[in-house]
Image 1 (cartoon, one colour):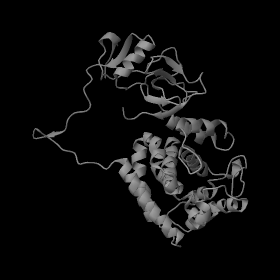
Image 2 (cartoon, one colour):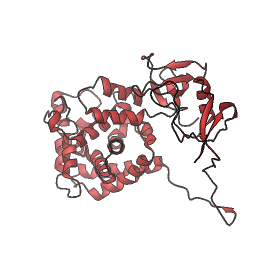
Image 3 (cartoon, rainbow, N blue to C red):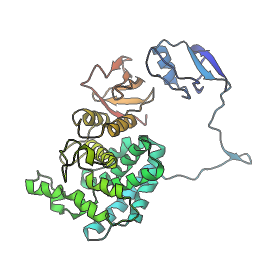
Image 4 (tube, helix red, strand yellow):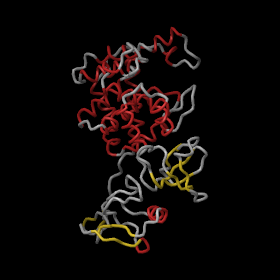
Length: 360
């Protein structure tokens, strides 16, 4: 399609950018095929961009579907939250069955996770809200489902095919199934655990492996990942204290997903934390424990903030994302809504993005 350069004074909302736009930056501030909004017009002004390349004669892509001049009524599609809550309830019932001695039903596990996997792979931003759905009382059930979903998104980002991605999701879902073999008195304890109780918790990957080892539908690599998902590259993990060469990449994917969800959720003994703060902690304070490729994939997923995204900072100020530095994606330039000030999170490291505002 033909490109024309239009002065921003004549630029209409809804036009589509035909080339990546740079502003003395190594990477684009706005990417090709972005549909222009009012926010983008402000970005052009902020960076002194006076002419913008757009597609000529761009038609509105969202056409109303009509049949015999009557608008078609599209059947209501269940929201992710409804499907998610239903899956958590199904998982809870399966977990109770495992506590009573039942074997893992892989067909039921697939039924629980697959509809959600399809939804999160189509829209990765869904994982931003998973910690909002969890609660301390039923954290474990939420955690297992969420770990499966986050694992799937990371696997997709790393380039694995659909079949492998689904296997990773199932592995993430079942990684903590062995907690059903840990006594509830220990598992649900609200006060600090004793050394003996910690040792019992540390056995749950072994219990999980024993529960899945005979499942023919689950690949051996995923069974190994379930066994190893609490191992760490520096040897500080459990149950065997394995190091780099002996820990599978799929175990690392589930490990990072597990830690990310756990740290962002409200627990009995800890309040929930920002996704952005958590991935910085995983990348910095936990450095050496996790595969850097896996961590970078999660950072790219969480910090993939389009220009114009509305965010809330840790000081409760709200602002618009104006520019994202590829080398520090969790710390973009923010234009504060209240004052119009440009706030550089890269230089103000005591502040961080607390959440993305999806409904305004």
